[in-house]
Length: 193
Image (cartoon, rainbow, N blue to C red; front, top):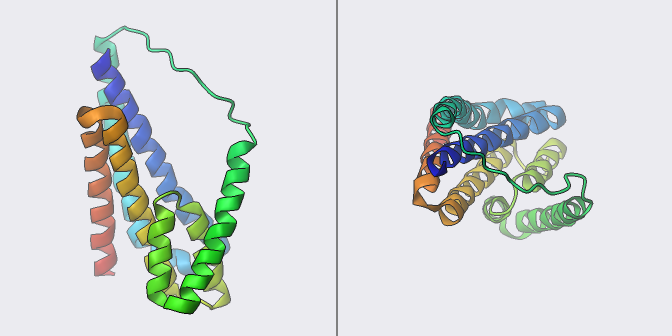
């Protein structure tokens, strides 16, 4: 049962990361098509690699579940809780302020630093901030694209670390390998374009 749970959790974690990559692209495409064209190569590649890995992990998890008929119940929380929405709003405002101040006082390097720091916790706030700033012209498209990519990579590193810490090496190495392959492929493709 433990082996089955490992594969199910790895599939779920990797699948959630696939949606993160695609969500970043969709949000950027809705708000700033020019930036989406720049990001589609790096973030799109990351998303494609993770999506393929998710499909493979789904088959492995299904095969493992067929061998083990044990039931594993998981306690669920209320998905409509207001607390996370309020926390995100506060975090978003903080990232908006930090990103603007970083750009003003530190230039492009400040944007990259703010992106890395933001990506440690969340990619949505910095994605929205840089998308808007690049649309209004206060941040260049390439700087916004690099910043968003840095945030996504930083977030992937954190998720890998959390998976190893909370799920142990057996589970964490699967998630880490997939995210490492995805971010490596995305960064490689971004260098080619």
